[in-house]
Length: 334
Ligand SMILES: O=C(O)CCC(=O)C(=O)O
Image (tube, rainbow, N blue to C red; front, side):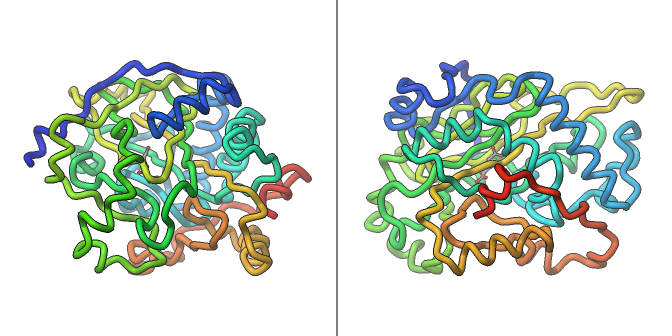
């Protein structure tokens, strides 16, 4: 199947209140749901300011007001989808601020019917303006559609992932894309893709969905419109990724440059799913400022990603300060 056929469709989707029965019903039937204004516009702006504090605090010379300082020589290491997964970002003030907003926990608590939750120490998708440098364009959607759950070692429902949009999206910015209802395809992956799956270690919760699957013909991914502060939630079995804009990127104002997308990845799961060993690893991750994937029932340290490990001169990045957590935040650590 060609890239063209996988072009996402920009879509206005219903936006729900955190914790509402309607939001849960939508998540169950469609495999995703948008929670409206999980952060207020002012909170989203504050989180974005804190994100810049993190970037400038790396000590590589990034200046939020000077786009000429946003090059790869100074920017933290990015993986697929323009995601900054490591280098302390999971314990930045920005990420702790966002994941501590009450509606985020309300949304996850309603999914699990449990409010004793642990939070991931996830990173962020931070996209630089592609009218300044086309090399900053993020990975094309069709090439990395995936599910974030191992189809054999983790059958059935296990996790709901989230991304809080700190900026309003548009067809020009790009954003998260997913295939509504595709969580229902998950169960037949082992039969359909036995050979491909055979190459996937059973601990690896990431399966790239084949772009030539005939089901993709009639079900193009949607790119849902999100307002600043909206929380997109998706079942880890839902085929998803992110994709650049469908129209030319917004023009940068050199005296007030801006990212084109800033999304905070956030995920919460019941504490009862984590072993004592995992809880100890999570507690140790705070002073070391170790980031993780979305999962909190197992400990996956994202500083061990090959892109980070193989990077030159990691010492040039200063980690953010050790966070001083409130009691509520310590409960999210476990
Ligand atoms: O950037 C996004 O919204 C999608 C990120 C993604 O694919 C993931 O976290 O698994």
